[in-house]
Length: 354
Image (cartoon, rainbow, N blue to C red; front, side, top):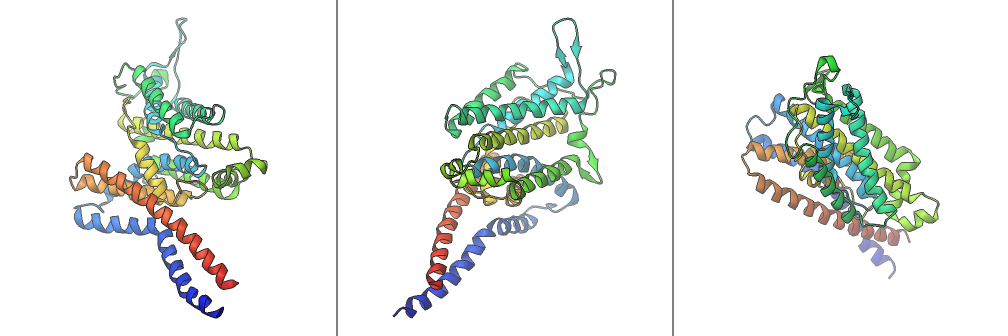
C-alpha cells in the first residue's frame, strides 16, 4: 500500500520539474520569440544600425530595471524613478548652461565629470529621501515613492518654468564642453552607454551574489522579521536599495540629456512601467526575496525589443502601453504559478524520498 502513492507521485514530480524548468526559462523563451517575430514582421529589424540603436534603448531600461530589481527583492516598489530621470536631466542641463550663481557676483562652472558627479549625487539623495520615508516614518513604499514622483517632477518643471534647456554644447572658455560624449560617444565601436551598463551590471551582479549586503537584500525580502532578529540592519539595507535605484535613474537622466543635447522636464514619464516590467519578466518576484540581475537584463532586452519592434511595425503608443501592461500582468501570474509549482514539486520529492 505504501509503494503505490510513491510510484504514482514519481511521474507527477518529474513532469512538474520539467514545467518548472520551462517557467524558469520563460524570459529567454520570450526573448527568442520576440526576436523571431519581429525579424519576420518588421523590415530591417536585424540591421546593424537598428541593433545598435536598440541596444542603447535597452541600456536605458536596464539601468532602471536593475535598481528596481533590488527594491522589489526587498519587498518594496519605486514609482519615482521616471521623475528622478527627468529631474537629474534638468540638473545636468542647468549646470552646463548656467553653473551655480553664488549671489555675490561670482558663478561657479563645472566640467563634465563634475556635472556627472553632482547629478548622480542628486539621484542618490532622492533615493535616500525615499528610504527615509519608508524606514523612519513607516510610509508604505507605494505611497512614499508616489509622493516623491510628484515632488521630483514638480522640481524639474520649476527649474526651467516648464521649458527645455537646449544646446548643451557648453563653452570652451568655461570648461563645460564634452557633455555629448555620454550619449553619443563610442568606445571600441560600442556606445558609451553600453559600456557603462556593463560596468554597473557586473558590479550589481557581484554585489547580489558574493557580498554580505547582497545576501541581506534577499534575506530582508524573504523574511524581514527573521532578518531583523538575526542582526541584519534592515533599515540600512532598504536605504541602500532606494539610493541605488536613484543612482541608476540619475545615470539614465544624464545619458538621455547627453544624447539629445537638451534637457526636458517631462523626460522619463512612465519609465517606471518599463523598469517594473523588465524586472518582473526577468524573474524578480513581486512578493520579494527572489530575483537576479542577469534575468533582469534579459527582461530589459525583451521589453526594449518589444517596444522598438512595435514602433517599427507602426503600432500606436496607446496599444504599446496596453501590451506592456499585459506583459506585467502575465509575468506576475506566471511568477505566482511558479511559486506554487515549486512548493508542489518540493513536497512530492520529499514524499518520494520518505
